[in-house]
Length: 125
Image (cartoon, rainbow, N blue to C red):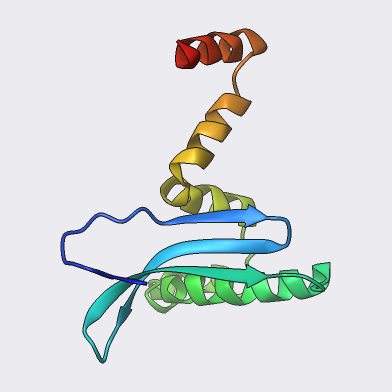
């Protein structure tokens, strides 16, 4: 765990390896008034699908509540029975949280075999 100085740029990312999720993040500690760069690992071994969805939905409620709290009165009716797209939420968040390696993997996955071969040749030179 390292202390992060004001103005430091820290790469935040999430990596999934089997049932373990690695979160590299920065979190502030109020008593010390300092921010710390940390690696937390979440082991999902023996967590069934329903439990995983229940857990994931808790975070989604927490993230969406501020939007409701600040919504104009004339829009409140639409919040009473609302369906959120988790895919859209993930896509929006991932734009900012992918590690450089994940960004490269995603880009390479979209390439044709010819483009991949050309890139490998360029990198091997």
